[in-house]
Image (cartoon, rainbow, N blue to C red; front, side):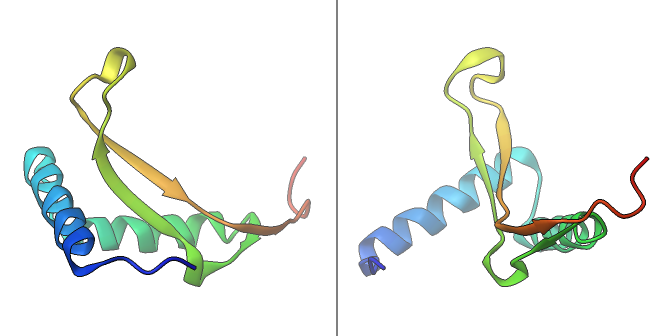
Length: 85
């Protein structure tokens, strides 16, 4: 796994702060959204909770150009069919 330099880490944090500010969404709110998503998705599939990543960024393409976009990386271990249909 590649380690980030302190410069890259600082740049990433600043970008996150600026995007969060533009969206009116604090890092605490993003953490709460992440926790809620983990809770809901875990009802339907087994996920790697410790490896879930949530990122707010700006979309530079399509109809959302310049607007904040919430991106989630959620590693799935298995999908349960119980309770479906």
